[in-house]
Image (cartoon, rainbow, N blue to C red; front, side):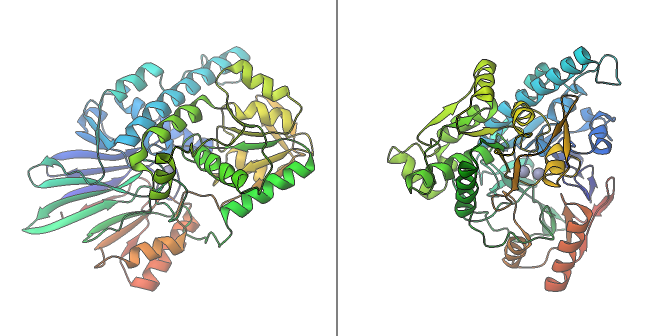
Length: 464
Ligand SMILES: [Zn+2]
Ligand SMILES: [Zn+2]
């Protein structure tokens, strides 16, 4: 028998952590940070539900921080086993974990200096030193490579088409002479995205965990190229700057790819494009290096010598001085800067400067989690607090979910339709409660499967 315990991303979209006790081993799948509202963020500071030293191995579906950025804290609290993921995920985690640690250290320093925090002194959740310790434990695998953790326990990572290196994890064992399989869905991509391959099909699944970020929504058939072109051209007409708060990983590279294509097609003017995020710059280099993880058309372009992520007038802004210079510059430009939900990072300085002017455009290109600054701006809040100061929101705000890296329910159902038999149990994870409920209903109605929406802390006995 095995026991599966839901330690995060249950009826919410962050903090992915699933504990699987199986055949005497204790495994953790995903090790994400809780983000968004304070009630969730507080959970990052709570004692981990089991002693981290008792965990034998961790498996990471992809490098997004809601799936991987609790790792340094887990190691700090005693975890010393191996961390398995794909090669690109490891590369991206190296950038991401250091960046997260630095931001935490910076935020603590800033809070202490300005006296924002109730905690005296304010401390970071973890430091760059803790991130370094975690990175030493990584043991990357290729897509499809077999890992035998025990004699009768095989693990494989399969392409989930969500971000570079993203995977769903396929674990196979036997129970009472029967082969049993559990699939941890991670985050699931959409087909036909720039740069990435489409998600791979799963077969012979007994237990399935799938995400419901967009479980109650359909993306519609709006074309991301048309939408980005419209917002950029409108922004140019408005006369101000175009600020794009963007996740450093994947979203920024998608944007660079699409902006270059639009420029080459003559659909938008060539503007200066500033990538103002050291992490996004490092990530772009990894994308350019890991050609084998790109889809066929990107690979062909790259082999032909095209720099697929470089619009004509792109500038990668590394230093703080350069960042300040574009903040005060007057000309029209596109500024892509992290973080994607405006919860931290350099984009806050751009927003503080530009939100108050009507001629500017703020373009959000991803799901804005409840409780984040991004969500409040998109919801039309009149003023926004940044670095302890109330800033009026006068700029034009757009939010495009056409660019989402998550599958909507149509794509989810289409993927499930490819199954050769129903799973014994399907768990819906990684969604707000309404989205989970909606996806669960659709799966029950369409396929008649046994679907459960676990609560945080719920545990299930699995026959495997
Ligand atoms: Zn993700
Ligand atoms: Zn996620």
